[in-house]
Image 1 (cartoon, rainbow, N blue to C red):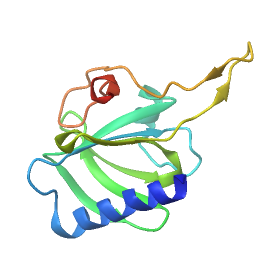
Image 2 (image 1 turned 135 degrees about the vertical axis):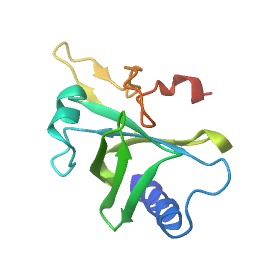
Image 3 (image 1 turned 45 degrees about the vertical axis):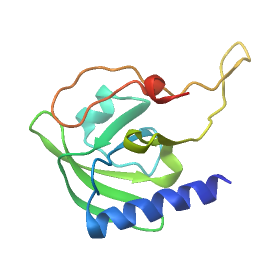
Length: 140
């Protein structure tokens, strides 16, 4: 099931790569920054040591989609940065313009043996066009 859902993300992003974002569509993509194949600037990895939510909306550049993930340049407070996000690292993929979202549950066992299924980041207000947001407002 996860493979099929990630295939859907690849299909959507491939269409955006060719045609651009239609209408008011935009994406909030939360991914695991510790994934061994995720590529991001050192300063971003330090600021978001476990997960990060990026927004593809008004400004993004050089979107390149392949079978394993996607590469995109996003603007972080007037500092363009290139990211590579493997599909396996994606935790949530949301298009709030049509109230569509996919969430990939993670189950990390904490020290006390309780499973933690939380993947929603907190808003850290980094400014610019790409920002970290809480996805709680999009959940029903």
